Image (cartoon, rainbow, N blue to C red; front, side):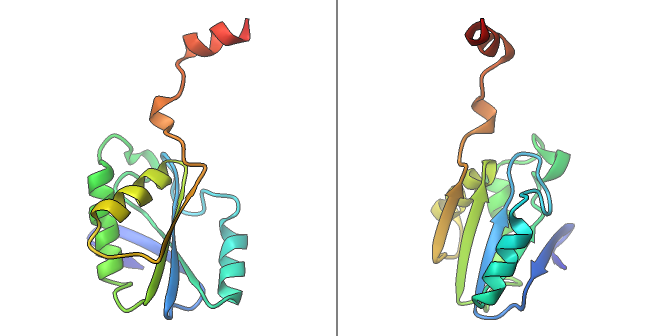
Amino acid sequence: FQYAQGRQAVLSGELGAKCVVLLGGLSDGLLACPYAPALADALAEAGWATCQPVLRTSYLQFGFGSLDSDVEDLDALLTGTLANVDDVCLVGHSTGSQVAAHYVRRGARAVRACVLQAGCSDRETDDDAERASRDT
């Protein structure tokens, strides 16, 4: 479904009172996390829907947006399509953890929980020279 101009998301399960929003990592898009389908199935059994939005920094758009622009996209989703959902939980994978944490700090809507899974900064990894010096 389209949740904002040029922004799409995929919904798994029936949208009711509870929804988990899964945010992928750097350059990730839909179904980027191998555990996403199994997680969505388990959540559906417990009465939760799963939503995977495409943000401005998704796929190869990294570098053309920012954490602030991703928060704007999440605001559009959470105050638009998901406005009538009582419980929203954010699950950020890798760089998606930064997006989730930034949303909790600056977003327009409170969320029930925020899960930071593999929350490292991809932008601060070692360069090739540092890795090579450890390998010798």
